[in-house]
Amino acid sequence: MTDTPANAIVIVGTGLSGYTLAREFRKLDTDTPLVLITADDGRSYSKPMLSNGLAKGKSADELAQADVAAMEENLNARILTHTRVEALDTAAGQVQTDQGAVPYDRLVLAWGADPIRIPFGGDGMDALYQVNDLTDYGRYRQRLGSARRVAVVGAGLIGCEFANDLINGGFEVDVVAPTDTVLPGLLPEEASEAVRRGLEEAGVRFHLNRAVTTVEHAGEGVRLGLDDGDVLEADLGVAAVGLQPRTGLASEAGLETNRGICVNQTLETSHPGIYALGDCAEVCGHVLPYVMPLMAAARALARTLSGTPTPVHYGSMPVTVKTPACPVAVCPPPANSDGNWDVSRDGNSVRALFRGPDSQLLGFAVTGDYASEKQSLSKEVPAILPA
Ligand SMILES: Cc1cc2nc3c(=O)[nH]c(=O)nc-3n(C[C@H](O)[C@H](O)[C@H](O)COP(=O)(O)OP(=O)(O)OC[C@H]3O[C@@H](n4cnc5c(N)ncnc54)[C@H](O)[C@@H]3O)c2cc1C
Image (tube, rainbow, N blue to C red; front, side, top):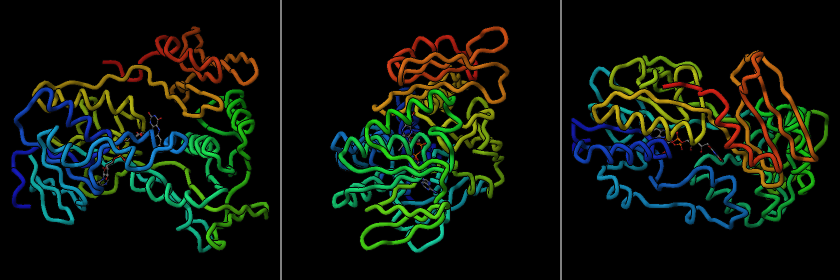
């Protein structure tokens, strides 16, 4: 595109990563041209609200905090909306978009992750909603307007949060998942059971150890076929089966990728002058698709881009699961850690502490009344990525 400056820092993505980085950078440098490119409409919003906005009565427009004109003014930046990056031309120092080429001096990839789409059989895949941005949320809210019963596919963090939000919003909710617990991989069994019970007591019906095989249209609604022959009918389905960092374009351009786009502790990819953060990035082997890590990354990268190379520091990174039916905070121990869970329980309040051989606290999961211990426990857990 002819009117974008050649000496700009170009950020691809206007989610929390792209906008937080731009905001942090402008605190340190008010002059260097900033260009943001986004496939969406560039409205600023907080993505975690997508899975608890319904019970709060928030429409997509109400979740939007600022439109693109306000963001351009606040950030003193050019924002190219509805513009999709299709290739990185690292030799020429430009990104190819569906609206033309955009040159960069330095490039930041903040383009997020794709929801995993399992190709179930049947003709109803389009009736299965995936809610990963404000536009998705707008469509989902519109469809919910005439719905009573919702089927959620997946009992991970996002699936459980949607289930809780929907039940609080007055809907009938069925959750189907092939696992025998909820939040598998994130919580030890006792904590996971507490969350399941809390959600069941609130009215959610779980169908665990069952896989969806087909999704068919059924009138205005949807019919899910399960692997045990059961059939589940609902007015709409919501699929929440995980996210996959967007690595394709980076890998085609020769950047090193693994689970995410590989970056070092200064958030630089294998190609000098190209950086990545947020849901698309794998920082020194860590893929942490949550708000706290991306905020830390944005602050560090802003300093690096403004002339002070700054490694990102990840302290302990507890995650709060937004299931008010049974509040949960979890700080998973590092993969393959040596140690044991020590669990105490009082009803749906579970305190599970993972200690290493030297009794050092390496991780925890707390539910119910114990969830309030998150802050104090987090201080005891070692940093994920020390400075
Ligand atoms: C429903 C839900 C609830 C969540 N709740 C929590 C929570 O409670 N706590 C927590 O810590 N985390 C939560 N998360 C995770 C957290 O919201 C994300 O980690 C974070 O928002 C990711 O931000 P991002 O900017 O990296 O990616 P995104 O927000 O996905 O932004 C990606 C941007 O890149 C753009 N883009 C993508 N591809 C292209 C392209 N080719 N060309 C141009 N632009 C492109 C998109 O248009 C978008 O602007 C939740 C996630 C979801 C889905």
